[in-house]
Image (cartoon, rainbow, N blue to C red):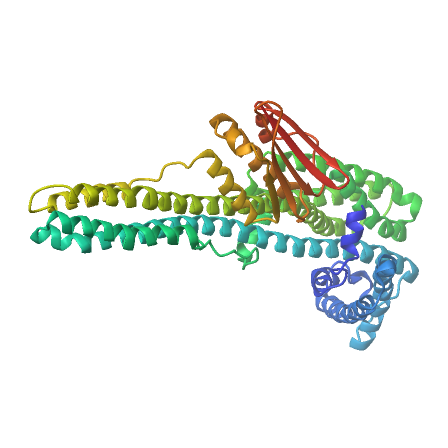
Length: 555
C-alpha cells in the first residue's frame, strides 16, 4: 500500500496521460449523458468541452504540485485529485450552457461525491501505471544494454586475444622468414647462420617479449548501461508478462467505485444487495480468470485478460440488473458496469504486471551487471594470460632456442647451414602457432587479483609463505575459487566501496582467504558456490557493522 501511494503521488501524479486516458470515459459513460437533452452528438460535444476544461484544471494542479514541498505532497496530491473531481460536474453544467445544449443539474451533491471518488481512484491508478511504465522503461533499457554489452565485450575480448596473438606471432614469424629467406634460397655458412640466429634473438624476439611484458593490453571499451529501446520490443515484453490483478483488492476497488453511483441512484439500503451480489460475482470471476490466465501461453494472456474482464463486466451488469429488478428498481444504468469494469480491471492488471515485471527485470539487470563485471575480469585475465604466455614463450623459449641453435650451428662443420636454419624456423613456427598452455596456479591467482582490481576498487595482501603453499595444485585451485566467489559476493552484496582481500597462511600448511566488502547480505542461505567451497574448507559468511565478510580456511 505504501508503494502504491508513493507511485500515485509521485512525479507522475498528473501528466498528459491523466487527461488522455480519461478522455474516452469523459465523452461517453462519465459525461452524465442522462442529464443531457439531445442525441449522441450533444453528449459527445458537452463531454469534450467539459474534458478540455478538466485538462485546464489538471494543468493548474500540476503547477501546484511543482511547488509543493515533499513532506506534504501526498495529502496535497489527493486534495488536487478531489478538487478536479469536485469541479467536473460544475464544468459539465458550464459546458452545456456555453454550447447552448440543455443540461440538468440532477442531484448535484451526489454527482460531486461520485466524481470525487471516481476521479481520485482513476487518477491514482493512471499515475501508478505511468510511474511504473517509466520505471520499467528505464530498467528495461539498462537491462537490454547490459545484455548487449556483455555480448559485445565477449566478442571484443576474443578479437583482442586473436589480434594480440596475430600481431605478435605474425610479426615475429614474418621477420624470421624475411631474415632467413636469403639463407634458404642461396645457402649460408655456419658462422653466418649462427650470427643471423643470434641477431634474430636479440633484435626481434627479445624486444617483442619485452613489449608484451611492459605494454598495457588494450581492454574492451566500457559499454554503456543505457541505450535505445524499440518500443515494440518493450510493449511485447510487457504483454508477454501480463497477469491478473489480485482478485480481492480488485473487487474491493470496483465496489468502492460503484458505491457512490448506487447510493446516489437508489439509496444506501436499496443498493446494498446489488453491491454485495456484484462484489461476489467480480471476486469469483477474478479468481476463475486468474486460473485461466496462469494455464495459457504468455502470448495469449493480454487478449484473454481483455476478453475475461469484459465477460466479468457483462456478468456483473446482468447480475445488477436482475437484483435491482427483483427489488423493484430501475436498472437503466447497470450497463455502465459492463463498460467500466473491463477498463478498471485491465488497468489494475497492467499495474500489477508492471510491478512484477519491474522487480523481475531489476533482478535480471543486477545479474547482468554482475555478469558483466565477472566477464570483464575474465576478459582481462584471458588477455593477461595470453600476453604472459606469449611473453614467456618468446623470452624463455624462442629466444633460448635461437641462441642454442646459433651455438650449435656455429660449432658445426660444412659449408651450408641453410637446412639447420629452416629446421629452427619451422620448429619455432609450430611452437608459436600452438595453443597457449595454462599458467602456473600462483600466476593464475596473481592475474585473477589484478583482473578484479581493474573492475572494482580492490586492496589485496598476501602472507609471506602463501606462494610456497600454493604450489600444491588442489589448494591453489581452491584458493582461486574462494577469491572468485568472495569477489563475486562483494559485487552482489556490496555498495561500491573498497573491497579488501587477504590471503594468509593457516595452521599447518593451510591457507585462508578473507574478503571484506561494504553492503548487506540479501539472504542468510548459502548459494551453490559457498556450498561447493564448504566441501573443500571451512566457510564463514557474516555481516558485521555494515560490512560483509567471507572467510574460507583451506587445509
